[in-house]
Amino acid sequence: MPQAELPDFVAHCIEMLDAAGPVRVRRMFGGWGVYARERMFGLIADETLYLKADDANRPGFEAEGLGPFVYETREGSFRMSYWQAPPEAMEDRHTMRPWALGAIAAADRAAAAKAAKQRKNKPKAGTAKSGAKD
Image (cartoon, rainbow, N blue to C red):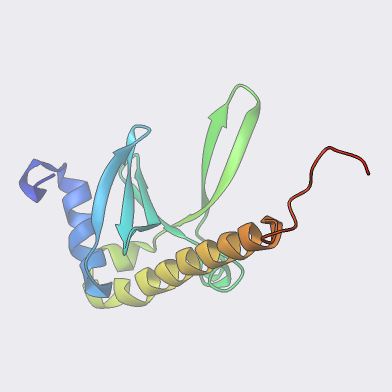
């Protein structure tokens, strides 16, 4: 989607996040997913930017007093691994850069962990289980 067609806040987020490298957005669930190298590292919802967080970078968000993205369903509240970007980072690309790089790194770690889990659970060639008994 051309940037001219994006809502102003989404275009602003892209401008701030571009300090960490090229990013793109995609509409999803009433908000926007933010991607770098085909990995989602950000979420835009209700005029708020949230960045991917894990054990490595979450303490920075907590130290700033920022909170996670929470959504409601009939079953209750669900907290996601995306945390609100610091307000000062929303106004300065250089301040945003380390936050964005940290979120991209968290997305990379999550993808690596998922791939490792899939490799671990994948049967090795020639060891497929069958239902037949000897």
